[in-house]
Length: 372
Image (cartoon, rainbow, N blue to C red; front, side, top):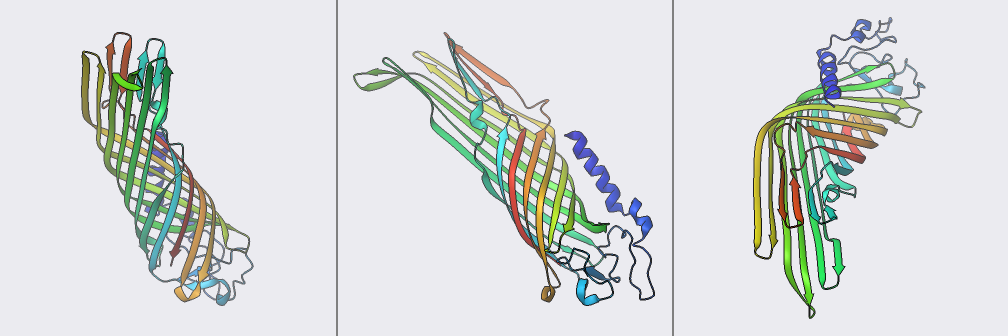
């Protein structure tokens, strides 16, 4: 994970600097009419080889059928303008967490699997920015994810005159805010966009666990034992983020393969808090732990799928929609803010570990937007 993120940041720093290998082609040479002949444009230029300076290719004509001698076919005057989009992500979160472990003699109850959210959860991502006629731009992005799960009948024992019930609940909330510089360019059949900037994130995971043991006497239940735990893990961080976005058109219907990758390195605070209470007749045990340390957070994101776009002449820009597979990996340094608590009464023991802030997301994303 650290290697992927670091490599992404280094390549972005080189690409956005503009002194990259394809700059040597300098967008090709010009013919007598002033049109650029085939060549790889300078980083920062979105001009196709058959369009004059200050123009861009019609995004809906990508099959090479355009006659480079006709502006009306595939070349349009470039204008400064808005870049905006909204995306619905449907992701499943997987938290690597062992949770609470309750042992009664030879029986064990592990609540760790309750922290894994089994359903796809919808969440919004929005972005808005501005691009110049040379491919430079500024962009802001926001993504938020909230998932919750509860199970009041997670595990039930029903022995003669004894009933044991275990319930649990989990909640996850994450947000990410980006402010970045962007640069759009083209090389060969690929349209590229690089970005580099600042990111602020917040990650918060809550996990609760309740156990009750009761005697059933004359249709009444008398609680003779219980265990309750609550865990919190929160990471707040700010740092650097960078990304590459690529499109390769195919056919004459405005379709393109689309792919992007983002890496982030952030620094902030990692807070872990947990409490537990173990109660049996005449015995009550309680524990509380709280740790806060500095941490480094690493985030890797990627999408792969199809994009459709169409030029809108009256708006001098392109509308687009895409459907993508998405994967994210959030990790943080675990060297400090981690602990384990254990309580024992007779043959009963209650073990509680701090939640690990390592989360995988996988699912799909659908977006619509506009570029000028």
